[in-house]
Every structure is written in C-alpha cells, then in structure tokens.
Amino acid sequence: MNTLMRRAQQLQHWRTYCIKQCAVAATGNETAAKGKPSYEQFIDSRHQQAERSIVVQVSSEKSYNELYNYCSRFGHIVSAHHYTVQHEDELHYLLLEYANASDASAAIDSSAHSGELSGSTSVPVRSSFLWFRAAAAAAAGGRRSQAKLSAASAQHKTLPLTTVAGTQSWAPAQLQLLLRGAKSIEEQLQLLYEHTRLNDLGVRMRFLAALQVQRAIAGMFPGARAQPFGSSVNGFGKMGCDLDLILRFDGGATAAATGNERELSRLVYHTKENLSNGRSQTQRQMECIGDLLHLFLPGVCHVRRILQARVPIIKYHHEHLDLEVDLSMSNLTGFYMSELLYMFGELDPRVRPLTFSIRRWAQSCGLTNPSPGRWISNFSLSCLVIYFLQQLRQPILPAISALVKAAAATDIRVTEDGINCTFARDMERVAFGSRNTSSLSELLLQFFEFYSQFDFHNRAISLNEARALSKPDHSAMYIVNPLEPLLNVSKNVSLEECERLRIEVRNAAWILESEVENSTLTEQERHEQSWGLLNLFKHPEKAVIRPNMFFKPRMVEVSDLFEKAQHSNGASSTPSINYKN
Ligand code: CTP
Ligand code: MG
Image (tube, rainbow, N blue to C red; front, side, top):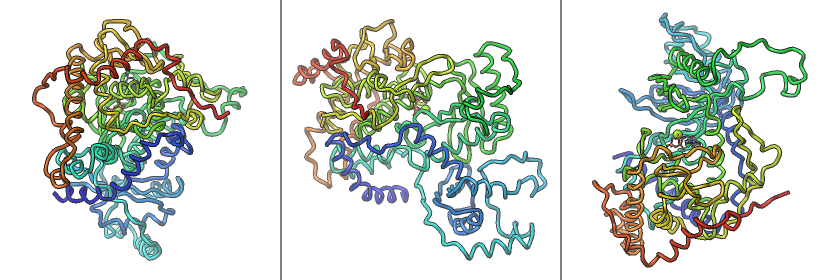
C-alpha cells in the first residue's frame, strides 16, 4: 500500500510535465529532431556511462553515506541510484557513476576477492559487481586502511541518492490508481507511457550487463562488442523488459592501430580457420560462450542454450540486475532494425505513447504473450503502429524508402552476410514535418478502426513503401521485414490469432468510442471507477464480437484510408525528407 501511496504522490509531479508533452504532441514535430542524438551517439554515450559505473550490494539504503564516502576516494561520483531486487529477502544495490572510467576501474581494482577473505574456492573474476563489507571486517584486514577510510569519510559531502521505486513492471492495481487520477484519456495515455516505459536506471543496468559480457572476453577479443538492441534501447521498452544482446567479434578497432593502418600493415595475425559452415560454427562458439557465462560471470544464472532456433540464442538471468537476457551472435539486422524503431520514436512524440498503449491493450486482452508462439509479437505490433502512422492522409512517419534515399556515404552499413542496412541516420537530416495535428486519443481510435477494416487475407504491409502490397504467400499476417524483404516479420501468427486480432481491434474501437462519448464524469467519479483506457485494458474472459455496423458513420473515412493504402503508388503517400545539405 505504501508503494501505491508513493506512486500517487509521484503522479502530481508528472502531471505538469505530461500536460506539456500533450501540447507538444498536438503542435507537430518539426523541431523535435533538432539536437537529438543519433542512435549510435545514444548507444555510445550509454556504453561509456556503463564504463564509468559500478554496482555495489549493500545491507540497506542506509549504507549509502558510508559507501559514498568510501568510494569517493577513487574519484568524483556524479550520480548514485538505489534499487532493490526481490530474492528470498529484499536485496539492496547502489549503482554509482564516476566522472571517469579510470575512477570506476580504480574502485574495481581495489576490491578484494571473497575467496581471499573467507578462504572459499570461489573463482576470482574481475567485474563491476561488488559488495560492501562491514567496516569492522575490513578493519580486521589492516588498521592502516581503516584510518584512511575515516579520513576519507570526513572529506566528502554526499550526493543526493536517486531512489527508484522499481525496475520491474507495474502491478495492475498501481496502474489503476495512476490512470484513475488523470483528467482525460489524453492524459491517461501520456501517464501510461511516462510511468511504464523503461526508466534511466533500467537502461543503465542493461548497458552494465552488456559491458560485463564484453569485458569477460576482452583479453582474447579486444575488438569484441556486446551491444544491447530491441526494446531496451529503441525507446519502446517497458519496465522489466528483457535485454536483447548481440555479441560481435568485429565490433570495433583493437587498441593501437586504426582500420587504415591495419589495411597497410605487412604483419598479419595468425588465426584459426573455421572448421565447419557458418551456422554450426556460430552454434559451437555460442556453446562455449554459454559455458563461460555460466561458470565465471558473477550474477549470471539459469543459463539456457537455444541453438537450433533461426537465430541461435543463449538465455540467462542476471540476479544482481534482476534481468532476463537473450544473447545472440548472428542477428545484426535486428540491431539495425532497432535503430529504425528508435528513429521513428524520436521523429514524433506521439509514436511511443501510442505504441505503449497498443502494446498494453494487446497484453491485457491476451493477444501477446511473453513466450514466443503463434500469437503476434510486440515487435510486429510496433510495425502495425508504424504502418498506420505512415499511411495516414497526413502521414506522421515517413516510408523507410525515404530514409534510404536520404542516406549519406557515412550511413552505409552492410552486414557480414551481405544484407544492406543503409539508411539516413542523422536525426536532423531525416527531420520530418508532419502536418497531422491529431491527438493521441484520436490516433488510438483511428488505429483500431483502421485495422478492423484491414484486409489481412490478401494484403501484406510494407513499411519500406508505406503501403499495402499483394500478399506473396498464404501466411495469415504478412509484414515485409524492412531490412530483409524476403522475410515476413509476422510469419508465426496463426490464422486464428489474426482473426482474434481483428475481433479485438473492433471491440477496442467500440469501447473507446463509448468512452469518448461518456467523458462527462466528475472528478470524484473518475477517482472511484474505471474509465477511459482502464476500460480498454479490462480483460474480458471471452472476446465478444461487436457488430461491424457500429462503424457505419465512419465508413467513408476508413474505407478511404484503406483504399489509399491499397492503391497509392508510394510516391504520393510517401512524405518527403528535409535535406539539410
Ligand atoms: N527483430 C527483427 N525481426 C524480427 C523480430 C525481431 O528485426 N522478426 C528485431 C527488432 O529490432 C526487435 C529486436 O529484434 O526490436 C528484438 O526482438 P524482440 O525481443 O522480439 O522484440 P522487442 O522489440 O525487444 O520487444 P519486447 O519488449 O517484447 O522484447
Ligand atoms: Mg526484446
């Protein structure tokens, strides 16, 4: 209950901010891209932040001052975050960020190994995951170091600690309370996004998990990179989402020589030839990496190898970060696809809140499921949202082909297996001035209406061309994979699940329309009963088929949109890109 009260208080702070956001959303997005970091800049800055950070387990939040004073001897601490992980007991952690990576390294290098302290046989692995032992125990290790600690304690004024209420997703009761407190459906949509999206600490934790893997193999592979992708970094992730990680041996330059110098060098490394074909080689390497993670990396547990999948992965849980990780080594297009989603999210402030509400709705009516299967995935849902926003009469997002056309020489990216992932990456270069001023709640309703009319039976969705194409095979739902156009993103979706989606979007449109019409509740009534999005998220035991008659008054508009999606030649529905040079 305490957490609920705390959430209610936080709500007050958010309200002003969210109202501002609504205003931004309604006034267009021409300036939205200005000064925004590119995906690569964002990834780099988060990676560097992880290099400057350490995670220390403490007995409780109260240890903060003592830890802060102790750790300040290694360098200037610029931020501190507290979080808990529910194990058998509640475990407390403090994430400290230093001004420089060398400070964090100094803190790590000063640490003792638990084997040295207790005489146990634990493997002495160097990592950013530490624990803070009691001063008395440390004092037993030497009176001099204790004297140093006291002197250091006197010198530092403690930095305010950011206590994060949670890193896991919200319970339905908390969400109820939050959304009932809103003033309108519009505000509910913003609140849902602001409160359920992955927070700053969640992103920091995911980059620390990536760095741990990268550092573990850095001795043999100094150029290797472990890079987060998917919802952890594309801005569509919610609290508690899994971390998708790709480990690339060719991720960057080795220490001394630049790429150019290496090309000119007369000295060439001796290496091992691959003994088998690419796929089985990757599987064997992943098996080996899986063993390494399982045997040596602190925090890593429940390692599972899923090597027969189209993209072989190693799954594991990180107990210090309370995180599920999917590690792959051969899915670079997934990484670049995340970049496209990131850019779409940055291009217009309505994209992410809209997608969040649609993902939440799909989850609440059982259309999506955490385990993979014949149901629609969150990624496919995001593609449906993007396509919907591309095909509007006043498009909110550009076709991917427009980003490809706007690419500069520095944007060329081709994966090892020859897949071209070239598209414009500079946010200013792709700045897109949409004239669409629809509010989030209007767009949500239009989304449900659009897909309740969409001809999934005959048409395939192309985000590249921002239009519907003839379906090339008999898959129930066909979304052309933007980077590998011969693949269908939603190939897994069964006919039954596709039909269920059609029924649920129809129901959702019906509910939402009634909610908009009945939006005359008093403030007290809004606090006491479910309304707006909450009614959309109520999970009916069985989907009820609403009569399609309901859509009659809007038929002209919807069929017009549909017509346009089917017959436009791409150029007319494809918004242009603003070239800056
Ligand atoms: N991806 C892809 N093609 C697919 C499936 C996934 O390119 N058929 C890429 C997308 O970039 C996606 C990422 O792989 O974002 C990770 O996939 P997944 O974990 O399924 O989706 P997320 O977007 O991470 O969503 P979730 O929060 O459900 O994990
Ligand atoms: Mg994911």
